[in-house]
Amino acid sequence: MRMVKKSISVSDQQADCISRDAEITAIRAALIAGEQSGVSHKTVEEIWEEAQQR
View 1 (tube, rainbow, N blue to C red):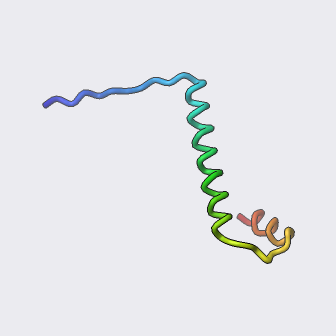
View 2 (tube, rainbow, N blue to C red; view 1 turned 120 degrees about the vertical axis):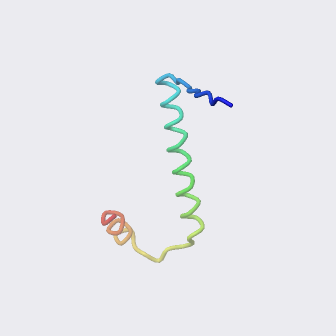
């Protein structure tokens, strides 16, 4: 049986929408992980220092 290659073309607007959806999904996942990690006893300065080191 012969395989048929199919492709899909999307407009720039559709590609932007897909990209935004992926970004929103990543942000939601990060927020959920943060909520599940519990309360932090670090100061804001300590949190900023750790974020800048990444």
